Length: 132
Ligand code: HEC
Image (cartoon, rainbow, N blue to C red; front, side, top):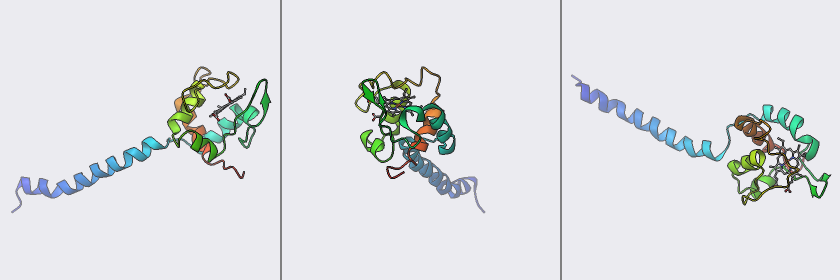
């Protein structure tokens, strides 16, 4: 007859597998943002395209500066494949080294863009390739 502790031991592998699965999933979640590219596209077209162009290629002269190319994979490699740094650029206007982007680039956090909306835009930008 199975004792309580035998039953508990029998269930343990499943629990270990579950925990191992969670630990495995966590880094992938941290490295990429959990954004929705479809929503991000709409946000990009309404908030960003005026300066960065609808295809995110940038290159528009604005005063003393020129809008940046936000297409993949260029932006991704410039920001060390790190979505958190891209998000900081969007929300707080800091470049990949922590320096200030030109003031023409809005500081979107101050304009009410949320963290989740920034994630959506980044998810969309990952889909906009240089050849587009
Ligand atoms: C009023 C014009 C304008 C708008 C609107 C604008 N940007 Fe920018 N953005 C710029 C300019 C100009 C730069 C380049 C700044 C620099 O070189 O210092 C820039 C730079 C950036 C960068 C840094 C790129 C790099 O190469 O370092 C990111 C990321 C970015 N913008 C994302 C966005 C997103 C996302 C939106 C919409 C939510 C947006 N921008 C809206 C003008 C704009």
